[in-house]
Amino acid sequence: MRILALDLATKTGWATNAPSLSGVDIFDVRRGESPGTRYLRFVSWLREKIGFIRPDLIIIEKAHHRGGAATEIAAGFATHLQSTCADLGIEHTNVHTATLKAHATGKGNSKKDMMMRAYRIKFGKDPIDDNECDARWLLDYGLKMFGS
Image (cartoon, rainbow, N blue to C red; front, top):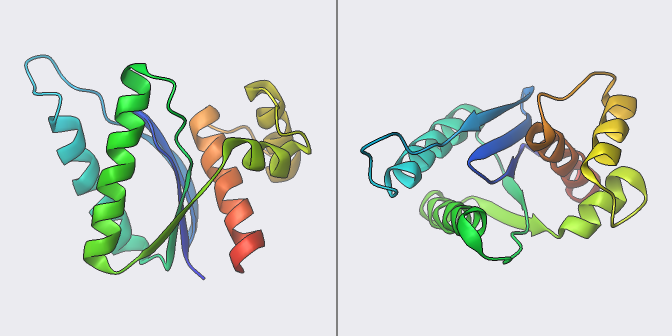
């Protein structure tokens, strides 16, 4: 199964097993741009990733609604991801943050540093940042739950 795992945010972490790659892409709004431009850029990026990877499943970390700009952006990305998946006939699912943390560290309330430390132990290298870290853990969880 080909999986694309995404940690949705302005700095979106991504990971895939087809081929085994991961990274971080940034969707900042530049001076003078409409805030909606970030979503246009995201959808274009997502369709490009899908065209390259051809995933059977896209898995994301479930957005928490705490309010503020970060929540708005994550929810907007999730909405655009869902419509893109519907348009292209790709399955998608989400994983609750506590479930992902428990998968990575054994504790559902782990802090970022614990997730990063577990990443180094499991994957034998440093992640680019916490966004790539979360995406790689999402991929690992997806492979465990939905097969390789």
